[in-house]
Length: 492
Image (cartoon, rainbow, N blue to C red; front, side, top):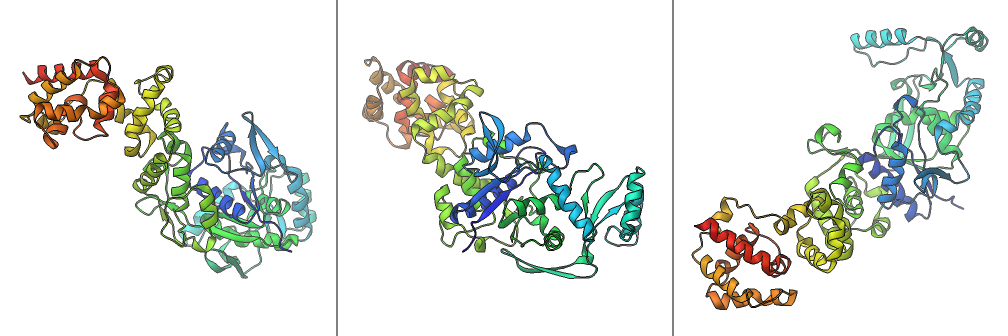
């Protein structure tokens, strides 16, 4: 009987969740859900010097925002970090006693040893190796110190670390679900530190112990860990444990095909949320950065991603993060929003831009929904909303193209016809606004572009834009007449 698939996402709480980290979590989650397995969130905080306050909460909150459900591990309850599951703790700094047991086992079996080399000696060694054109690596000076002597030196107060004793000149072969069979010679690595001088385990020890004890069946992580895998395999072998399935994912690259980093712009999930990307849009696009379905489909929700996903469609090379493509995908998901949802999501952006407070929008909610309907199809990101609706709240400012449109000889007739049609009306309803321009056409004798473009520019300052009948309704009779007065004043 096949054991249940168990995958883990195991970030360090050293800052906000990187977009590449979200993709790693997503691929783990998609596979777990497809296979009826479990998704575990473990926090790897053994490097206490890099711990950032609030980063753990941010990680969990952003995963949940993205629709990635945590089955086991670290999660949030009422805004507070909590842990669920029976294989915890799921925060590495709370597992130090667990690691000690396995370090002792490695020391006893001769697969690990105490090292007393100072930082100065190691720095000097690396410099000498660089000068000689060698790969900087530990030279094994302490490998053969007898255990009894090492323990005496520790008792005397000497600082030490514990290192893994790698086999010498051994080809280590493993299978990767993306890259196939990989062989790395042990001489290409060095005797990795397993326990630092502060008593904390390094990533390499903790990750192997935790993955085994938490029953992780598939290790799905970034390709930067590929070269470390032989060390991990040696640890599995030394501890007598079954080796999980490895899946090393290609990197997320910028347009220059280099690793996506803060220097080139936005890289954190928080950044993209702030710009008004929907969770569905960002997740949909991220899934396609390094993976492709076996069809031409590009727009997915989480359920259809789960159904389509497979590791054999993951690329071996890095995927380029294309913001234009992200905008295109996100625009599809914005179009799918209900007007009610779009309106609610728009409010923080409207308030921040100083255009409209939430209570004002709620007081005229039906009209606000018409506004959302008017602009919905032209949106790529929610942050664009204030710019799209500013014509309602601010007096239009005309660019060169708009000024040229107002030179149309039909404009005076259009203004006169608009006034004539509007003045008998008390208030312009949506239905009346829908038929208004036909009446203006009949009254002015102008039609087509000679009618609609000058009218649009006169009322909004924009040459292009959404449905004019909706704009007329949203502006209302008084504001339309006021703007016509302003246009005539400017033309004098």
